[in-house]
Length: 246
Length: 107
Image (cartoon, rainbow over all chains, first blue to last red):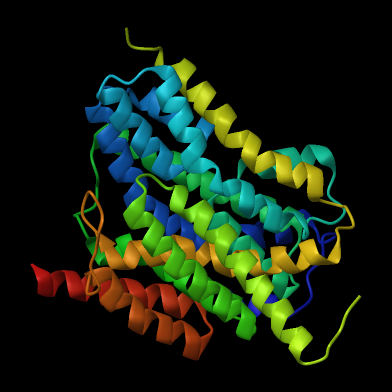
């Protein structure tokens, strides 16, 4: 699949080629979604949701960790406001991801942007951003990739709800697929000393904040802190070298 | 009184969608100030490490610091594979393989 990146691709390519590129790019995400989606389906079914409701939830929300949290909250008798507020807080990190993706969506109509937004997840963000930076990527391929991942999530959660896991626990290390993908995409992001410094600062902040605050607020807070401190250091040191910019 | 699940899912979908949508809608196809672009350039490594780091070195509920989790021990060689090969496929497959092996040893 890496060879597909060698020849220039463009947004004007015929649809089958765009479709193929988008679907191919999604494979690590699909692989990682399978065990999580199955596990979620089983859990949700035990929590009293029908396969239809599980599928509807995956389609409407499409955000793994918040779906797990919501199902356990509903199982514990939480009301609508509490579940919705928690979902908002847990998923607010996508606000930052969309901000970083926005600069790459040149020439995309507002309608398509609104459809693309539906597919922004941790995984699709990381994968699309790397591909956009490589240069051989465009919003049509990104859209296909998002929807492929979406289909895998929807399918695996419904399958889990229908009849169990189909996979022995820990099979083939699939539980580590997404972590390995994130690690690789992080390596691709380390494109300069200040990128690396930012990553280290953010990692440290995230660990400290994760220990201090429950939930997933640490991801948003650490990302904001890391990027801002990284930029401040970059500005400070480039000034020190006399590279004054007005 | 338990709320209707469909209603809950609709509301969850709405509060998940809007934060995903708003920055794309507001920022795409727009010329942004240089300083904001530089900040947005540093945001992806910050987000990725914020997602990764706590998953590797914290455990339990409530969370506590734990350096040598299986995830961390597998993440180190996986990171090196990514660094050396620059291949997503090789990294994902070797990470999975190592985690699978680690799981067998820990049982």
